[in-house]
Length: 129
Figure 1 (tube, rainbow, N blue to C red):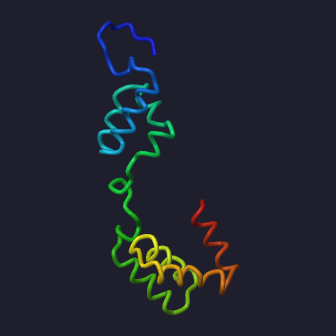
Figure 2 (spheres, rainbow, N blue to C red; figure 1 turned 90 degrees about the vertical axis):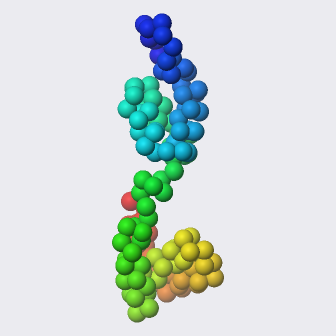
């Protein structure tokens, strides 16, 4: 980071200091992080550090799919009631992680290995790619 200007700027700081600053910005606002990234190449490079990426709050950037379409969970629950193994798995994830209904979520999640390993494998592949 060599700069010819004698005027102090953030880009004159070492990357580890910029990383700390961007991590704190990422905790507060993804909009401000984007503005910092657009300000100079050094900020853009530092924004790709794992420490910065870990601190970025994604709730406002990418809401969970069930919040994008409120009727989605109703459809999934209807399929789960009719014995769809994939829908039961999704309901288990939703109940356990989002609604914090631990018992219901774990019961629905345990339905998968008990009933069909073959149906679970394609779903797991879909979720991990």
